[in-house]
Structure formats: C-alpha cells, structure tokens
Length: 215
Ligand code: 2DT
Image (cartoon, rainbow, N blue to C red; front, top):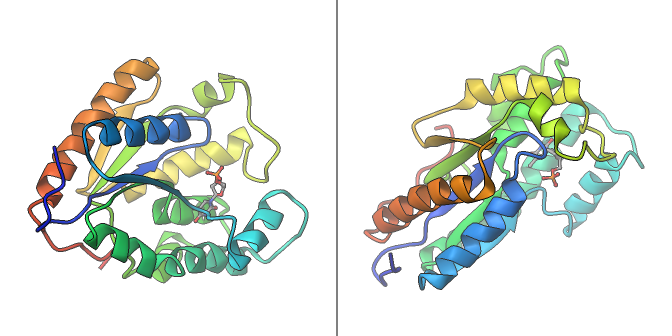
C-alpha cells in the first residue's frame, strides 16, 4: 500500500467499549502504516485541547455537571470544529487513524436513556460530518473489558453503563463496519486490523469521494 498523489487518505475509525484496546491498536496501526510508507496520523475524540474539549474534559472528570443534551452537542461540536482540518488532511493524502468518533457520541448518550434523547436524536447533530471509510469495531464484553485492570475514574467508566453502550453500538453497525474480536491476543487483533486498514488505504488511493455520515 502506498498513497498515490491522485487519491486521498483513508479515514479509519476505531470504536468499542472502554478498555477494549482501541488506544493501543490505533497507535500500533499508525506505526505499521508509517513503516509501509503510508502518511498516517493518529487522531482522537474528544479532542480535549480545544475550548470545547476543555469543557468536555471537565465534565468527564466529574469536575462540572451539565445537561445531558448540552453535553452531547458539545461532543458533536468538538467534531465539527475539526471537520475542515480532517478534510484537508485526507485530501492531502494523509490517512487518519481515529480513536472514537460520532458512533461513540451516539452510543454513549443513547445509553443514558434520557427521555427524548433516543438514538435518532443522538445521531442528528453529527449528520453530514466526514464519514469513515472503515469502522474497526473492537468487540469485547463489558465484563471482559472490566477484568483488564478495571475501569478508571471517569464518569462513564462503570460496568452497567458500558453494557448499555455496547447494546447501542450494535444498533449502529453499518456497511463500513468490521468487527474484530478484541479478546484475542494483541498480535492477533493487530494482524486483522492491518488487513482491514490496508484494504481501505488501497481503495482510497483510487480517490473515491468521501461519504457524509448518516445521510
Ligand atoms: P476516551 O476515554 O476515549 O478519551 O473517551 N464519549 C466520547 C462520548 O460520550 N461522546 C462522544 O462523542 C465521544 C467521542 C466515551 C472519553 C469518554 O467520552 C465518551 C468515553
């Protein structure tokens, strides 16, 4: 795989419950792609370093309280504020390996079961964002994930919440999804991830138009 000038980079997205290995696998994939001569960058959402991202960070850490709908819209705005930079990078031929995106956005808020904030409501603000070329869903039961050294102290890191999140993720699976069993060894997961990524990078080098999310 090599990025051809006429094509574009691939948008590769990792999703999954907390502690499924997304962060490790996304870092390893970037290193692997770079080693193959692919211009690859690691991105993650929420991006906690913008003004909106700092509000999200303060909410997740439990430092501040906020209305669930308002917080949902902040997470979405945090993606919209990165839209132009994402498009520029992809069109410049850079492959983006992204750790969480709008699927986490919809799954986590819908998992709260707030009246009115159903899955369709949760998806609406992200409609029209750049859509991933491939979603790599690292599938793992919340029980197994919890055994991996336990959850941290952030707001959503509780087994009950994670169970509901994984139910919501299942409702979001679409034709870009590749489910990888995250309970396998790091190496086994890694090689499946590499195969999916190489396929997407190769087809994006032919320059297919980027799709718009949920439209
Ligand atoms: P990290 O642990 O990966 O930093 O995620 N989340 C994330 C949402 O509720 N909505 C979103 O749109 C996104 C991207 C998932 C921090 C937590 O934020 C949740 C876990």
